Length: 469
Ligand code: 4AD
Ligand code: MG
Image (cartoon, rainbow, N blue to C red; front, top):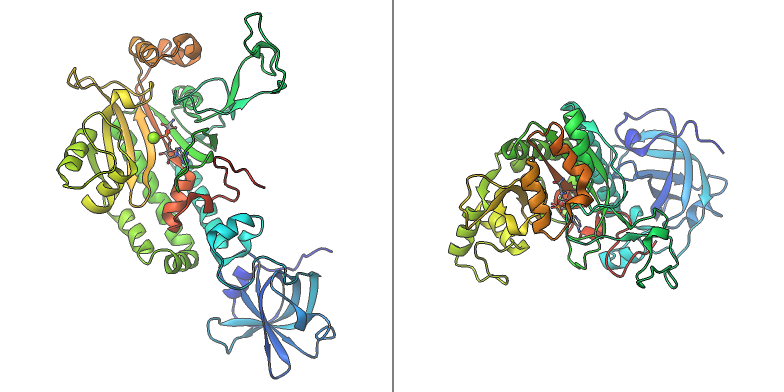
């Protein structure tokens, strides 16, 4: 069966009444009316709203099929697009035929009632059929579209960095091993260690935690690049903001310093939020009613006003003087926790905050050591962009472009410069100041949808002790 004349419900709902149309989708609800007809709400995922189909008992399959439709059934409807008398829609379809493509029954888990998010995670394969997950999926799509549009419009080149890698970009040792060795009886070296020389890649290999290092090699040839791909972290964090598999967008610019990087991050976020505001108004209205009545206003405010920029040292000073009782005490040198980040952006400034120049000790080896810092308090040209409710949305830095400094930073973190020979080559051959950042896609979708748990903004979340579906 081909469906050449099928129209999307999104298009039908914005069309003037008149003419015969064909649509297909899944039944959300069925309401029988006394006068010998019923109303069937059909949704095809193209937009938040379902279309109302009016089915009359004169239809040949009315008693046997149409009046018995249940939530989850799939149907093909041909009929007239007519002006609607009912509330909430301007057009409806007066069915000339309703073909039942696929039946459903009362065991269908997504019945028209309120389900908890926990329950919906257990039926993640069907949750996109709810209004909520449909809205999240469309907003996620729009964020991705807007990411590409922004970078393409600024002449950034889209680069694909490898998913399987041998280098630990963040140096945090949170990598998933990729191996085809027999885990129960791996080959051994004479010293009794696992012999990875006999593994698939003849060496140890992992799933990447970031495409940055490889991204830098292309930035140092093509000028401005971005990556957009899945990244993996074997970090045992069970929080509403951490996934073991998430998508990251990582731009990298040659001939740029930290302030250029922060400017780019601000322009980029504003452009993405603006696109979502412009292109997903119905989904945002639905999400703000469900999740957070200030959602749209917050996004508009962010698009229209400049971000705050402060140094880590200033941030710590504010946190110390805040009079708050922190679960994690603050002092110069400690990493900022989500409670600190949220206070800065939700209470102190009430807008996105870019925190720069963190202590070298708590940041990755590739970040550029600041020249002017006090010798007893070395800092790096790092930046985190913090937003309300989420905390860190972006992490980035200017990169260390001086060979000797970089080598000594690698050693200081207990790693071997030899493992980073190709990365160091960028500093041997035509080194240039350059900078970049990483934006977590799911945290961004969480922020723009107001969803409280990151597991509900990716179709199939992977977290410690769970990789269902
Ligand atoms: O701050 P991170 O670890 O930075 C990097 O990976 C750099 N290599 C980026 C760069 O400079 N090119 O991660 C960047 C962002 C975070 O700010 C956060 O939004 C997201 O990635 N992120 C996570 N999102 C979900 N689950 C996790 N476990 C995440 N870890 C980081
Ligand atoms: Mg970070």
